[in-house]
Image (cartoon, rainbow, N blue to C red):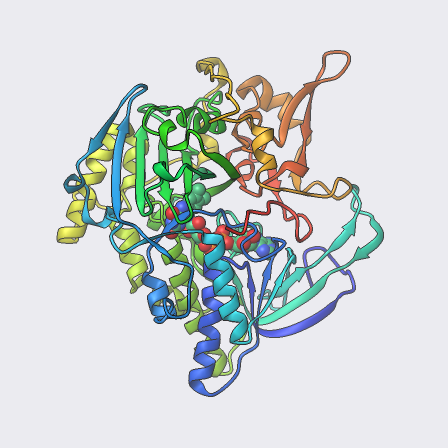
Length: 557
Ligand SMILES: Cc1cc2nc3c(=O)[nH]c(=O)nc-3n(C[C@H](O)[C@H](O)[C@H](O)COP(=O)(O)OP(=O)(O)OC[C@H]3O[C@@H](n4cnc5c(N)ncnc54)[C@H](O)[C@@H]3O)c2cc1C
């Protein structure tokens, strides 16, 4: 029985059903098949992906630590995995409005070094992993959004509903209506990435976050640029902090020089900011005009844009990872190493560990119970060490601002890495991000410069570079629990911050002929970043999956 009630659907049975073809889901699928091959048995595994193809929803341009890949596919180089650009140089800068101070590399804890990592297109890495998985017999279904869960009579998770198509705006069937299918498994792996819509339901239903710190988030925005050859330094990685966010707001930038004159330039804004006038997208745009950044981009062209939330709670915020019938893996659990802005290696490893727990359970004739071995092995693994060493960086930044937070955070990373201890224990995060906004009446408006159309772009023009599409006549997948809240409460109190925090211009406050404000949701623009679900101060916006194949189509490069 699903939460959507008694719709008649066909069903298919697998040993393991995996929701999401990101690094976590694909690594889990590969590991399951490897284990079966080693045992001389077989295991039926399917992976469901809401993007139109594998990689379509994965923001290109990342620096990846190959640690998990080395374990999963040790001969990945010979097999042609698209990790072609080793990182050759790391640079860290503190920015002021007109200048930059380079922080000496010896000042940074060794764990911050990118030695041995690769600047890659993460979308292409996922496409390659998907091909490896398919070669091992994994069934992968792109264009299939998992919109609901299926439960056994005992309350355990049995499967998911995927592939519902053809509903009109009011939710009524159109002529091309398809009710979708139930994909059932002995175990279901939730690998939806940050703030997954099914993960959110499961965390609430099974109270998986009980006793944990609230999850914290950032909004990451990225552009992919093709730059002039003379501005391109393959393997150069630059991180900045400071301007334009200032001393109190958390966040910073990254610039990764990849292959073929491609540079990924991105900006993260921590979503615990308090001024509702802050406009993350415009912070990113004005950042590109800084004298350290502009010369790299000048004469180049932006070829893609995208945005995605990033989990920042780390170790303190990890929920319980198993529930009856399945597990949370990857960033659905939240395994980003915040100061390194890296989660791919940890996401892959969680998938591999969950696969090992599920394979052993299935081999022992079990199904539908809790895979407690997964969390136990994770806590004994290098993922735990990776997250533990940096656990205080985010709470320190939140409490003490940029300078205090980073100095103490740096010291803490040093002592954790060198001596395995912290002077501070494990710090708490405090409030969830949605509770951090101050009333607009207590805050200053921020005057952002107009984009020049050369280095900086208005939001809607940039959204076109994410190749996002959604049908007009389908249920709006951004559900307001109470339709009156944006105008009756958020507007007077916070000047309705959704107008600004959404990096795709989905939310607008407009006026009718009589001058009365109304709230408009342009769901077609949604790039599936999930920021609205996280930051709305009334927690009134529920991000649900639209039909499969919609959303961004990040380029295959
Ligand atoms: C701006 C930014 C920069 C980053 N830079 C780096 C970096 O340089 N290095 C690094 O290591 N990490 C980086 N990360 C983090 C990295 O992207 C994540 O840690 C990693 O992608 C997590 O993998 P995942 O498989 O858990 O989730 P994801 O990669 O998010 O994959 C989840 C997949 O599930 C699909 N999905 C979600 N819900 C459903 C559903 N209901 N039905 C069907 N399919 C669904 C999605 O479409 C997606 O394809 C960055 C993140 C951001 C936002």
